[in-house]
Structures are given as structure tokens and as C-alpha cells.
Length: 180
Image (cartoon, rainbow, N blue to C red; front, side, top):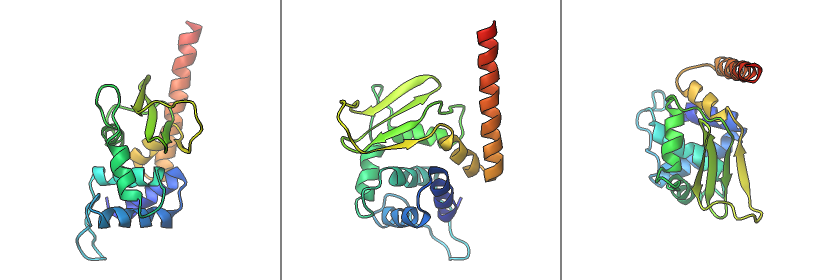
């Protein structure tokens, strides 16, 4: 996947301004957080899934283009109670493993923390919310899965259809459990 394609997918799925996310990606590359793509303009190189996660985090924790590298490093290294980092979980989700996020990803900016429910397990990265108000970013359920599907080659329409099918299947499964 080329960097421009990854930026386009993440920006569209998270409803972020494309130009802003592109500027964040450039800032991350200049700071060495993601690799600078080599090759010509006509045939640019591919980026790793780790770089895609950095671009995703950069968009979610945007507090200025110059602050993007430090913010991505901070949020990427947030740990849960078992020592798993937010970056590890996001990488696993975007690699399309069997893990599917079943709840929204909530990223709180100050203090840095995040929470996500994966396969029915609620995970908190960083310090739990203390009840005070803070700036936060919400990623709706399914957005990360849609990004993963598109990164693996699905068209936006195919990703939407697969998500809709998964929702219908989950609802049917729940209906069967309730009626049993």
C-alpha cells in the first residue's frame, strides 16, 4: 500500500480532512516516525502496517502538525493492565486477524489515554478517565474494521457491505440466543 492510499482510506473512514492528514503524515516522515517512501513519484514505495497505525494515531490525536510525532509516540506506547500497547492492538486489528473491535475506540487527549472493547473485553490504555472533562476523539464501531478491509484490497463498497453483513449476522445470532 502506498502512503497516499493509506492516508486517503484513513481520512475518509475517520472523516478527517485529507490535506490535514497528509500534512501530519509528512511531519511523521520528517521526524522519522514513519519511513520516508523511496522511489519515484510515478512508482512510490510501499509503507508498512506500523506506518499506517502511526498515520491513524496522528489523525486521532491531532494537536498540531508539529506536535504529531511526539503525540504518536506517546499514544502508541500507552499500555493496558497486561502490558499490551495501543499500537499493538491497532496493528492487530488493521492486519485483519481474527480480532474485530466490537466497541468504539475512545482516545482522550489529556491525560493521554484510550479505551476499546475487543471481542467483549474492555481494554484501557494509559490512566483511566478520572471524571473530569477532556478533549476526546471517538472512532465508531466498524471504522477500524472497514480500514482493515480496505487496506487488504477491498473497495469502499465491499468493505461497507461486509460490515453490514457482519452486523446482520450478529443481530441474528443475538435474536437466536434471546429466543432460545
